[in-house]
Image 1 (tube, rainbow, N blue to C red):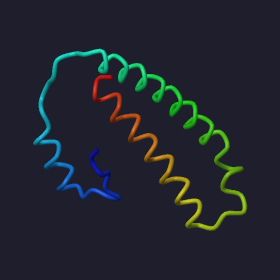
Image 2 (image 1 turned 180 degrees about the vertical axis):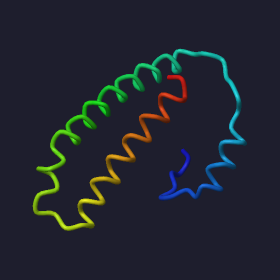
Image 3 (image 1 turned 90 degrees about the vertical axis):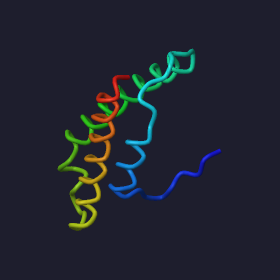
Length: 89
């Protein structure tokens, strides 16, 4: 089992992307991954809508760093969703 790093630099990410295989045959696990990705995509979109609708409530009583952390969380969800869509799943 591969270890998952705590962080990855942009340079490391670019290297991983360039070293990644360009294509692979379709298998049953690919179909399952596509279904999981679709479910994940729908859940993230729902969560993003909730976050946007309740942003005033969520930021009430929070300091600037906490509000920025919520914004960062939203951004990471959005970027993950965009990456999933770009992957073609």
